[in-house]
Amino acid sequence: MPVNLQMRVPGLNMPGWLLATLVAFFFLNLNGFLLFDHDEGAFSEATRGMFERGDFITTWLNDRVRFDKPILIYWLQAASISLFGTEVWAFRLPSALAGLGWSLAIFAFCRRYLNEATATVAALMAAAALGINTISHVATADALLNAILATTLLIMYGYSQSPSNKLLYAIYALMALGVLTKGPVAVAIPLMVSALFFLSHGLRTEFLRAIFFVPGWILFIVIAAPWYIAEYMAQGQAFIDGFFLKHNVNRFNNAMEGHDGGFLFYPLVLPFVLAPFGGLLFRILPSIRNLKPGKDALDAWLWIWFLVVLILFSLASTKLPHYILYGCTPLVILMARYRHWLHSRLLALVFPLILFAVMIAFPLLLPLAEQRLTNPIEIAVAQRAAQFFNQDFSILAAVAALISAALILWKRFSPWFSLILVGAIQALFVWFLFIPAFSESQQRPVWEAAQFARTLNEPVYTQSIDMPSFNVYLDKVTERRRLNPGEVGFGREDRLAKDEERLGIQYQVLFQSGPIQIVRRTDGTSSASAAAEQH
Image 1 (cartoon, one colour):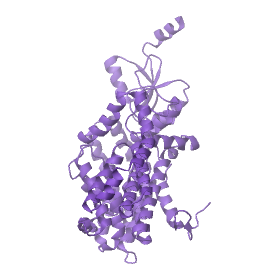
Image 2: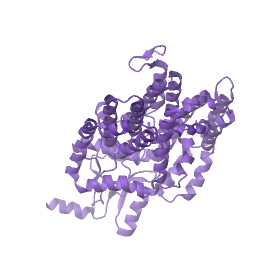
Image 3: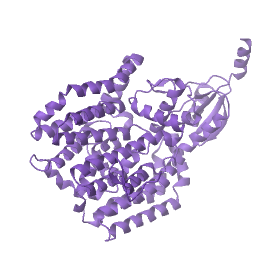
Image 4: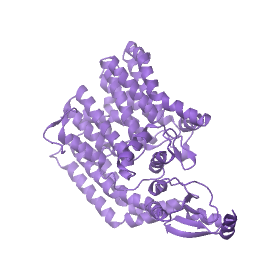
């Protein structure tokens, strides 16, 4: 049933046009590009494989247990694909719904503690911000965790203003769901933020009441503990080592998978995570003076929240841009609250122009990037990308930049309102041009290989490659091992060539797209067939 844009949405108490706009932002072209390896491919295949194995407690990738994340996102993805099939958009649906819920939580909070106009602006800014919108378009656990974490902290502020057991139950239930989504971080961040705020603002009694709220801890255990117990019973010490030590403790202490950076990493990337609102972000910085007790309690809460996340993850060794999203909700609210502080249209223009300038120059940057690459897969992606990131792409990026500049410089609109409109242009450009082109460059060979493998009607094994989206498109687990004579495998051209050179293995190439091959091992095939006949 279509949304009546002139009426308020029952239950949400918000304008119909606003809900329709938020849905459009978070569901924009959700099915318009292939799954990205490794993260989307890994999450999606781990979910799909649960049905094939009949195991909804432990997640696997081929023959390896996947301890990266707890179970909740997999269960939600499983529910989605059980209803809609193994479509790309079905794997992403929980993230898009989480993004929508995230923005609705911001709207409800701002309407209660500020006003509806600010609530509307905050929800639109959340939906238009590049980082928030992006993480809500991908089939990973991050949008879900951010929605849960943001809602937890928003309700915690509500508790600080009007303590009640009802709010405490909600907080503990949300933290339990967060622990089922990504682990201890869902408790650590709320605990640190609330401790700093409550104790610095004379709310020691309320803080102790919340911390020692036994019924809340019982609810927390009832929700979160069963899966952890079941997984430990299934996997034993390997679960403790893999999940808690490797993916939590070691991720903080050591830079995993080369994701490192200096202490200024997050301040430098933050204006682009919140693009196109980088100029407004700089203008709200003076509100940090309200951190002092006795000033504005809401501002103090929001700044403490952001600074805890910024400092915590700046100290961590592993740095990924999306980690700072845990602290972006308070910045969105502050930007909406103080949106009128942005007077300079030139400041508003700076970051959108930088972003679109990178897009305009992208075809020129690809050859430079290719010269620095050593991974054959990445080199092949860069070479294929030249087909999509061409002169036409640069022209469209330039047009988007000119429209954005015109909107910001047009004095009919307030600078903050112009930035929301630019956010819509940015979203259209990213999801209909940039991301589909990047997806075609990287993922099309994997998809084509899987479609060919489906026609063979025989087992296919993963050989010398780690691109789990292949299994999703094949709709079958592929055992990861070296091929026996006569068997068919999915692998990388350069690694298969090394097998032939070093081990004397011979392959017949059945299919090739870019560096991706489907091969049959041919050495020893006759003797293997004879041995099979004797048995």
